[in-house]
Length: 253
Image (cartoon, rainbow, N blue to C red):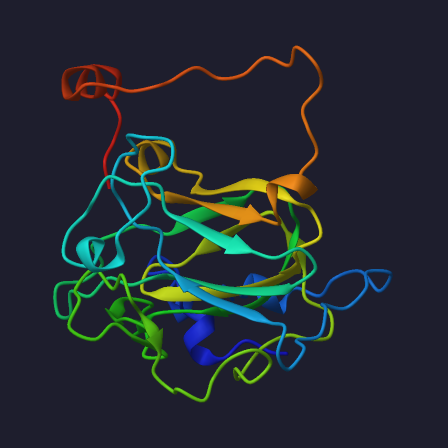
């Protein structure tokens, strides 16, 4: 699968004159010994489209109110429940939503605990001939929400295997993937490891600010218990003053 002209110019510092090709990670072929990604059953698939919402956590299980969080950043624990054995397909997107103002954001290295996943597709933003950002990928429809908390496929028929450009033959497997600015990544795995699994941006300051969610995979009865006397984390919270003090010297992008 050769990269398109758009995909060859995804980085603004590498114009065509530099003769550098940028290849999406989903175009990297896996080893021949690796099994192909699991098929999507007609009724058993779970399709999740998610942006990683901001908002610092407060209580352990303060469930996000979708209506409230669509209006503003909120403090809650965003989690998704998945039954054991399901094929899970997740679209992670990173929309900028500031047309005409250039890039105002960063790519996000998203890490998922508890699984390796297949990277089926990377969709990039729109770029000019010099690799400069000109607009978000048009596959994702953000509606009127500039934070794109409830984005969806612009083509309502897309989903499962029916998304153009998926590598369903030999995609790479990873546990961390870069979600490009103004673009998205489609990943897939089998929910065969019951537990509470953390999904987060690997840029530490973003994680501290709440760019994360939990996946509750399976029922509590299916989850393995920790060893006897296993040490646990205590309650953690920062005041605004402590946050500013500890983040002093970090660069913000």
